[in-house]
Length: 298
Image 1: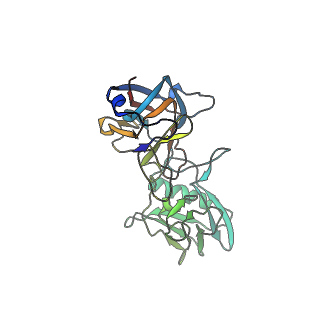
Image 2: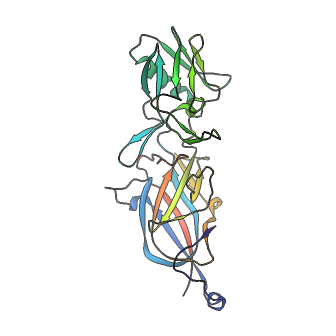
Image 3: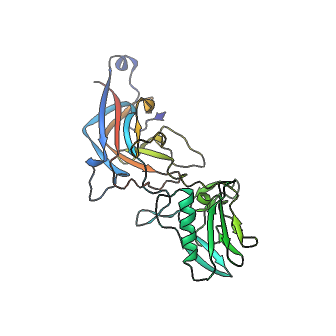
């Protein structure tokens, strides 16, 4: 539920009683965006006509492509984050390891880590495999011990000092099943993660944000730790042909404007993000949403 703010005073009961609700329906497509400046995971969609006195906004359908990568990083003027980099200590020397952006299973991610470690200057040979019992990853070196510096290296998760919760993910520690923000050292040249690998944690659900007139968010869900509050959460189950289809299961109001309706909506700014607020990569494929807006007729 959203409490609208601004210039609208409460309408007298007699006036409100004479105004009938009217439902408007819109088909939003990312193909209507400016291809030169916008992406399918973040774009502005202008309504054909401004809508006034908005009481409800509902998501009633749509089609969202599954993200093309589940292990990735981006460095630009807008976004700078790394889910695929960490620092390893081998024989007292530190090296930065980068896993190529990609769509991995647990087995292929273990293989990619093995390739990245064996490309480092030391002659140590590494073997990485998924543990059949725990679902975690086991890394074995040909000789000597080594450390993954998830707590002190160049890429460290931001962890709340009092609760231990992950505020910002800056390394693949959670993807590999290791504790965030903690250095780990091998024993007898073997290092095993305590938890199962979680390679799809960044893409198993997509957070959808509707912002109108560049200043107000349409909020439907509250989240912990002061995280940004989304308009919708799309869980990427029952994927068909690389897409999640939204049907009547999503027919619930994104917002109910009380005590007064939203005065005017000209355009919607849409963005699709992962758990930590970074954009998901749809590979430029179309995002399609069907929404309903309930207004009060004059």
